[in-house]
Image 1: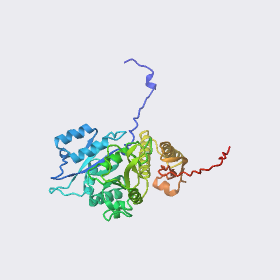
Image 2 (image 1 turned 90 degrees about the horizontal axis):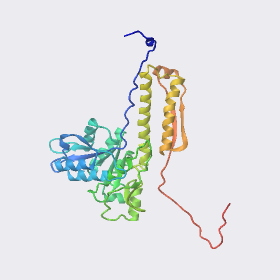
Image 3 (image 1 turned 135 degrees about the vertical axis):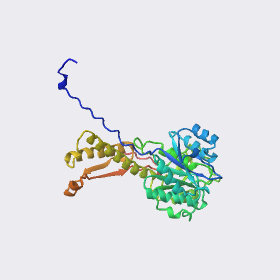
Image 4 (image 1 turned 30 degrees about the vertical axis):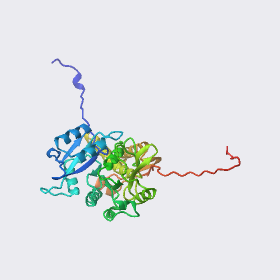
Length: 363
């Protein structure tokens, strides 16, 4: 090759690592029972991801899931917008290998943890308590249980569920017919919205849910809601509208999702920021430049939270804490932030005065 002057140009290219994967807030896990009377073999798998109702029908035809599981999956895919996928995991409760639903959840999570909301095919109090306590301890998911216990329509929770009253990550939906998959339909209709784009309220219309066999009275509805339990009833043009959208502590479920989304998103952003720096041979310094870089990510996420409706516009703030000797020793950057949650109105009150004299309208 003939000599050129191009050897004076040196080009070094570094490929920036991919961003850290985020949690799957839009995906539901359905835990189903596998025993002799309720076969859900999943073709020998612990968990299967379904991406269409047709795939669920095919597996039912093949004998891998039973009719109850198929009905639940069809109810999920009947929502608008339609979820892109659902994960089904099995709990082995047969004689060969006896598991609780909590143990089944742990076994599924060991294989795949790409879900956020959990529902189960059981309506038994013991199974609900098992999963609720496991989810509360884990601190990563939310659990939606369905119950037909008539005591939910009285002044207090039934004895079998009373121990869950402080579980912030569990919501209970009342439906008087156990075979109606109202729980999975409700949760699918809520988590389908991308939290990066919208903070969806957890009260709302739900498709493909059969009404209660016995109509709920106004007094019973008030008792259910007073117990921080959710119930689906007609509302305007919606034949089945779940309200109030709260956990057993009375906290709106969208607040829990906001906190979980913010934690996961900020973790992913800071990890990606550090990857970008180290890939270029640079330090994310324990100093003003490092603080500025991290603070930019934090403030950007708070702004995104405002735009998506998680926080009230103009009601967020973030600060970089003064760096101490202890911070330098620990190679640590510290920050403080605050945000006001954007509440979703569910109650409305109007006062109207009717008089036989002219109304004075102020200019």
